[in-house]
Amino acid sequence: MSDAIADAMAAVSARVLDRAADWDLAGEIPPSLLRELGDMGLLCAEVPAAFGGLGMTSAVSGELTAHAGSLCSSLRSVMTSQGMAAWTILRLGGLAQRRELLPRLTGGELAAVGFSERDAGSDVATMSTLIRRDGDDVVVDGAKVWMTAAGYADLLVVFGRFGDDAAAVVVPANAPGVRIERVRDPLGCRAAGHANVLLDSVRLPAGHLLGGGGQSLQLLVTTALSYGRMSVAWGCVGILRACLAAASAHAKTRQQFGKTLGEHQLVARHLADLLIAEQSATRACEHASKCWDDGSSDVVMATVLAKHLSATSAAAGASTAVQVLASAGAQDGHVVARAYRDAKLMEIIEGSNEICQLVLAQHALTLA
Amino acid sequence: MTAEQDTRTVEETLLGFLEVKTKAKVGLDQDLFASGLVTSMFAMQLVVHLESEYGVAIVGSDLKLDNFRTVTTMAALVRRLRDESAVTEGV
Ligand SMILES: Cc1cc2nc3c(=O)[nH]c(=O)nc-3n(C[C@H](O)[C@H](O)[C@H](O)COP(=O)(O)OP(=O)(O)OC[C@H]3O[C@@H](n4cnc5c(N)ncnc54)[C@H](O)[C@@H]3O)c2cc1C
Image 1 (tube, chains in turn cyan, yellow):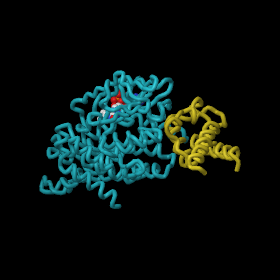
Image 2 (image 1 turned 60 degrees about the vertical axis):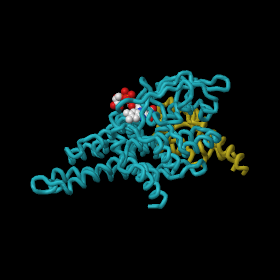
Image 3 (image 1 turned 135 degrees about the vertical axis):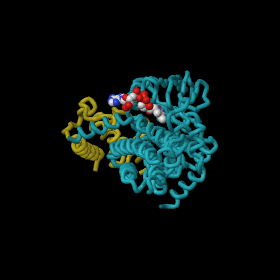
Image 4 (image 1 turned 120 degrees about the vertical axis):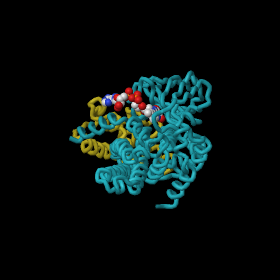
């Protein structure tokens, strides 16, 4: 492992320490800690050096994401949002916008991304947020739901309709007309700062419109989600690593019926299942990241496949880990208890299980 | 090679790529979206393919479905982006 990734992982570990359980119970990560990690470029590590970032490849950044995910899925969720915001700005923004905004995202400011609305979840193309030009300004009206990290964010990347097309606009969280309401008591990733965001005639200089607007909604969403899916997939690998470690350590020492749990074959099978899940999810993510780094068009399907495999494996694996730990892991805050709640939500976001299956099935039919 | 020949080569390569990826024969000016061959996921594959194959960056306002509607429009996009980068790089 190179020094850069080892240093990055150590920097994350040194800040999380054993505090993830407390953050989960409190529903909050200290914002100063997030800003500190952000200022080191660690929340969106793939931003090119030319824009102040660490310029990590997808493969290396993936390992960092998995590491964060093994410690705290709330922190990893904040990374996913920050990375998705940075990627959206990199892909959609003009050069001046990239030069202005990306160094802010690697300089301690925090960002969230909003597609989903109350009536536009899986069917995101039906979103009704309106972005319109008004002279030298742009005006945004709409209501986004469940924006990860919006509770901490300085910048909100908001997607909406723009005439017959679509656009993404960068909205400062403190702009007049923006109201951010925390989602209370989320099932999992409890400290990720999920919030519903109301945008009431938010007026901004037109320079906040990424790339001038007027892009295809489908392509905008697919572009942003491609990063988000990769990040969630690696985050789920982290969940599996944490579950495998906790279950194996417990099964090795805890004794019942005169021998360790690991010596009971039915328990041993759980450990085998966890190892298989962790390894296969890792391989799928490595492959998708390689496609990403190589610029292969196979990246699109490889990413959906990795996300789906990792999320379903993490949800099943976390359930298995709770089974092995039993009462020892049955308390909120415990690593496997968090994994159990956090992993379930990974089957819902960035393309639910069903949506991923539809995409993969369509791909199979196309190849037939 | 003239710019025109260049564009023709891009078109031919694209037709080959589409045939492999969609298992269907397509025409130069066939509307790929109307014929249901191309979904937004596949349009994303086309973006990545054109970028790595021709060393262009399809970003910002070029992320319009219309640019990917036919083989002809894609080849024209590649040609324009190559011309633009040639200008900015002064080559
Ligand atoms: C923890 C968390 C974090 C989130 N973070 C963000 C964020 O940062 N930004 C953001 O914009 N949004 C975010 N979301 C919202 C998320 O994107 C949506 O929850 C997701 O798109 C699903 O939409 P929905 O919840 O409205 O479910 P629905 O779309 O109502 O779906 C309900 C169920 O029906 C299934 N279903 C729907 N359509 C079909 C179909 N055609 N075929 C088969 N099954 C179908 C779904 O898979 C699901 O199981 C977050 C959500 C959660 C839970």
